[in-house]
Image (cartoon, rainbow, N blue to C red; front, side, top):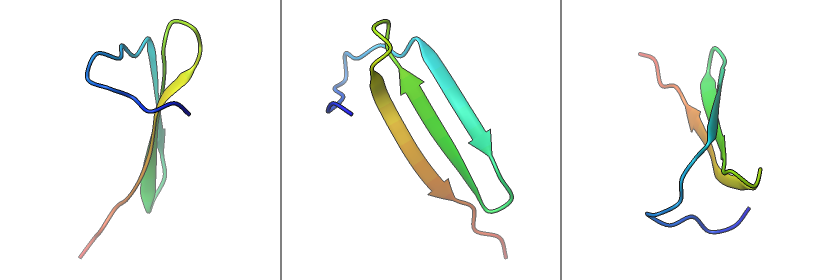
Length: 44
């Protein structure tokens, strides 16, 4: 994955939801990954 900057445009954004976490995955017009984030959900 290349380092993204402020001017990077995401063409497709995918969201994967699970019970304890969610993931975001974004690609640009050239189908190169520009965003890949994993986040845990904290529940009290």
